[in-house]
Length: 112
Image (tube, rainbow, N blue to C red; front, side, top):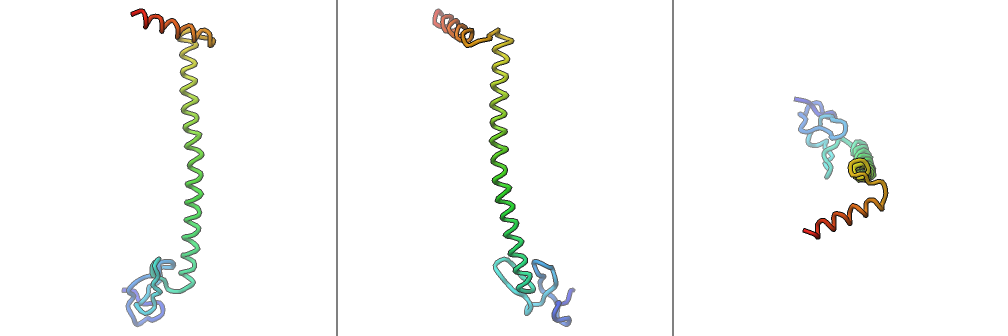
């Protein structure tokens, strides 16, 4: 069993959350964030967690743009496929040809 870093005659009951040094019950600095060996380690842990939170916040903001771009690209590819099908499969090369096709389909549908 490890001994306390400050009292070599006492068994350690926990470790510092920041530096992982063994601590006895008397040497623990107990906070809402965990157990620390000193105010310095507690301060370092606070700084670290603030930096992590800031990085996560930036990471979440960056994800929005690629999702928008991905959606835009999917729509663009869909439109491209539709245009290619209209042009090369159905032989439509202008808006007038497209409107003629629609009116022909409409007439065929209504004549039934």
